[in-house]
Image (cartoon, rainbow, N blue to C red):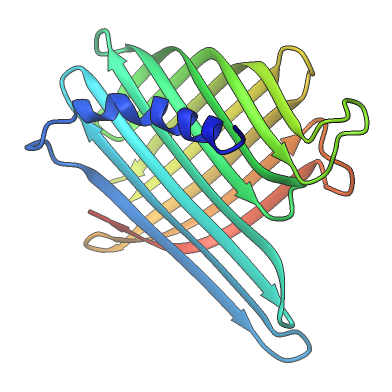
Length: 244
C-alpha cells in the first residue's frame, strides 16, 4: 500500500500528457551546477535539473526532475530527488484547468518521501510577448507522506490529508538574453493544518547560443516538521543551463 499510493499519484499526473502528439516537439532545459572545495574542509556540492514543456492548441504539458547532493569530509550532508508532472487544459488564451503531481525524497527532511496530487483552476492574468507572464492558480487535492519515525501525536508513520493549493509564477524578460523568474506555492492541510510553502527566485542570462548562467535562491518551509528536522530549508545555487 505504501508503494501503491505514490505510484497512483504519479500516474494521475502523467496520464493526460499522452495527449501530446508524436509530431509535437518538446522544449526543455538541462541545468547542472558543481562546486568542489579542499583544504580545511573537503566539500563537494552538485545540483541538476531537467525541465520539459510541450505547448499545443488546447494542452500544455510539463515535467521537471531535479536532484541535489552535498558531501563534506566524506560524509553526505544533503541528498534530495524531486519529480513534478503537470498538464493544463486551456479553455482560452488565459484560463486553464490543471492537474499536477509531485514526489520528493529528501534524505534529511524526516520523511522517506513526500507526495501530492492537486487539480484546480489557473489564469494567465498578464502576458507580454512570449517570455513575460503572470500565472495564478488555486486548487485542491491529496497529500501522502511517509515519515522516517512515528508521529507521537498520531502513533502513525504516515501522513494523509486533503489539501488546498495556491500558486503563482511570474516570468519577466529583462532583455533578449536575460530572464527573471519568481515561483511561489503553498499547500495547506485541511485536517492537520500542516502547511508546506515554497519560493524560488532566479535570474538567468545567456552566455552564448543556448547556454546560460543561472542563479537561484530557493526556500521551503514546513509549518509542522518532524522532530529533529528544521522547518525551513534554504538553498543558493549557481549553475549552467542549456536550452533545447
